[in-house]
Length: 549
Image (tube, rainbow, N blue to C red):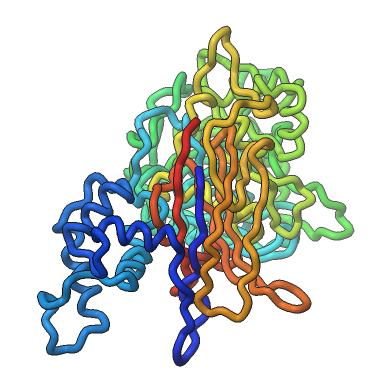
């Protein structure tokens, strides 16, 4: 794929006359071609341009007429009829190209097949979704959950602990100095905002430290708040996960099912998930730096012979699997049931070095969740491709942070209309000849060609930069870069604009886009701030060309 940066439009608003550079040659050439050398472009010519050059086969005159007339009116005198104007000038044509509705870089609608099992999708996943800041001392709140849902995050994590207040159950990062938030407040906010951005299911991953009595309480509260929105599987164990399409506007629960231990009298006793040897993320900090509430520890409940309530088990759709034993044991595929396994980024890295094929085979039917290592106390994140290239569906991120890694996550999930579910490439879902699976470390032949800054599998990671444009409010770079991609399906185009300074270059805007979803032709690309919020009136006009080898 080829991409050409043409200009940064209205990067800074300057009063008075703006010194615009001459439009680049390729843009003028396209205008001249479709106007047959004339100075204005008619509606019919604009439609021809949209269909033939932009590849918008479904575009019609009815789509173009309102904006065409509006562009003609802008800048014309109030008593001048638009019928007397020949068409769009070159400047008006450029204004048209900067309209996101017609010329954005990605499709706005869901266009992937959404009828496959959940294990066939990457899912926009949050980590400790309730924290407002760092992992040790920040406040817990429903506000980060609301913000994540508005951004399209589909997997929300809640850590559940006993409480003498908060209705009996609180959400908090256990054994830290973080403050709690009531479970009911979190669930009510999830219900209200779950489907603001996307209709596809919201999955609640629970780190459960509750007694059987409080598990029953959770089930009661969840059913009361979510009602018919709460999905309950018809069987104890699934042999295949349901599809996102079948779970539209549903809330799905994922956690380890309570473990049963035989008692001397033959009565089974199930203990809370937090008591099981597991990959859960409870922080084991020294007592000298952590003051635990007495309400966190209630051993009498654990010693009783009460069974974990049936109604709690019935809520669990995605079962957390065993995490003890060797990595080979953990990644063993059980044809009789599907499950979810959680690994830290550290353990994934280790596993990828010796069990890469097992990871990919596991994720073809089961779900793999990757969470940040414990040292990330400032809520930083790791490079998400570490998980994606081995098929991990839930790469859990601290959404309250910011940085390049989070921008990559945001870029990936701009795909498929921003619905929070991205269909995995077929090579991560299906086995090849002789039961072979994809190997991210193997050097593959180049499949496509692109430019600017690509982040993907190792062979596709590279960086290039434009020359500096000095003292210009309307810069035209008119430069072309070319990248050769071996796995374009996992590649992301990351663009960052900086304001050149004598001492340190200032951040001016950034965006990240999935290469596999880029639309060819001239495209208006909005820039964002450091945290991914779109900046007003700050755009790049780019041209993308796709060359498949």
